[in-house]
Amino acid sequence: MRYDTPVYFQKTISGEYDPNTGNYGEDSVDETLRYASVMDTSIKTMRLIYGEIRQGSLCIQLQNHYTDVFDRIRIGERIYTVDSSRKLRVKHTFVVSEVQ
Image (cartoon, rainbow, N blue to C red; front, side, top):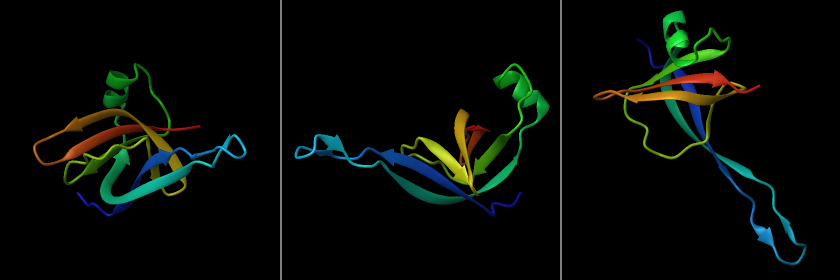
């Protein structure tokens, strides 16, 4: 198994309030890079998690646990949300689906 795919864990930071204008600033996104093994989700796993077969579902496996807080995951130009997470002894796996 090769851990060669760059995976970005994203955390959205809300814009700060400006009392002069009464508006909030633009949101920003903080990304953390990790390299992972990314593969398609098997049909058996999709039926267990979703109850149906979904397109755009991936399995991501990291060599170590990821403990930071995050909102979503970016792989390439596509954004994914975490549907299932599992910590093994030294690895961390995520089943994700694409945000449309």
